[in-house]
Amino acid sequence: MGTKPFAGYAHVVERMGDRLGAEGLVRLLTEGEAEVSRNAFAHLELAGLSAEDATFEQVVFHDCAFEDVDFSGSTLTDVRFEGCRFISCRMERCWLNRVDFRSCSAPGLSFLKSRLTSVSATDCQLRYADVSEATVRGLRLRACNLAESSWRTTGLKSVALVDCDLTRAEFVRTPLAGIDLTTCRIGGFTVSSDYRELRGCVIAPDQAVDLIGLLGVRIAED
Image (cartoon, rainbow, N blue to C red; front, side, top):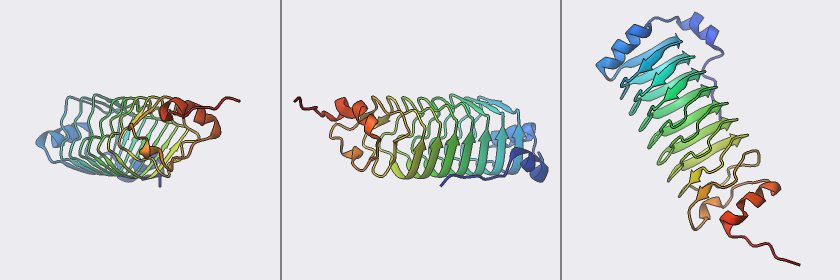
C-alpha cells in the first residue's frame, strides 16, 4: 500500500538529471497548467507561487522549501518529497497518485477535497493538516505527528497508521472501520456525537482508557 516511486535520490539524479533547473521550473509554473516530468530538484526554495492545475510526474524534491505555494488542482504521480518544508501551502482538489513524503515538515498542509491514492508518509510533521472531504484509497503513515489534524467527512479505505500521534485529531463523520490504531496515540480525539464511525476500529486494551470519556462508558463499581 505504501509507495516507493524511486530507489533513492542519488539514483534519480543520475537517471533523470536536472534538465529543467530551478529557474526553468519557476518560469514553467508561472505560465500556468505546467507539466513537469522526469526531473529532480535539490535545495530549491519556492515562495508565493501558484502551481495550480500543474502536472508532476516522476519528480523528486530533496531538501526543498515551499512557502505559500498553491498546488491546488494539480496531479502528482510518482512524486517523492524528501526532507522538504511546507509553510502555508495547499494541495486542495489534487490527485496524489503514488506520492511519498519522507522526513518532511508540513504543519497545516491542506488536502481539502483531494484524492489520495497509494500515498505514504514517514517521520513527517503533519500537525494541523486538513484532510477534510478527501477521498483516500491507499494511505500508509508511519511515525507521523497528526495531532490536531482534521479528517471531516473523509472517505477512508486501505489505510494503515503506525506509531502516529492522533491526539486531539478530528474524525467527524469519517468512519474508521477496519483501521488499526493499536500503535498510535489517540487520547482525546474527536468523533461524531453518535460514535458510529468508531465501529470496527481496532484499539489496544490499554487505549480503551483514553476512550472512556469519549464513548460515555461507565465502569461499574463492585
